[in-house]
Image (cartoon, rainbow, N blue to C red; front, side, top):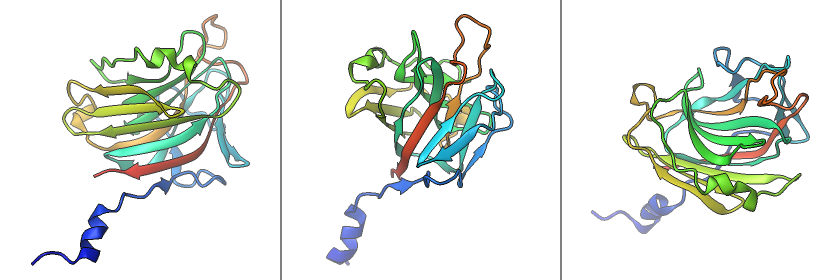
Length: 217
């Protein structure tokens, strides 16, 4: 028999967003001890803002959600210091193997482009993301929205301050073992503090707030 209208309506309701950073502490998240960028413990929460720096200098790392996600859309505000290389990892392993949304706010860097973090043969189209400064708000909070879905050929979309800068489908699933789910992670890149092209400004920070996820069918 047909479903009652009230029951049918439940299937039509949009999936609600879930807040995955409570603004007080890192409950629901953990530091990877096996990531090649390091194991910095300098993640802190103040006034609703999650921030990270290298500690000691040169030692980066990633902060992972305890929960794994499959098809989802993540929304967050970012405010990095100039000269600091970070990232947003999608479907990440504990080691940090993932599709990465680049947050490389430094000379020659890209914000919003895609990169295969420890993945082979990932060749995204970042031609529009390379022009991110067109939509970037300097010395202010910027909004990132990223969406990943699909099992055999992950489809990734990224918006910066409401403008779509990536709409790309991989040629295959390049995650380890063809995984279709993984954790969300935030990254502080490792660096050589003495190098002229260091990936992190000494004493610099990446900052995040208002982190929400909407799981997709």
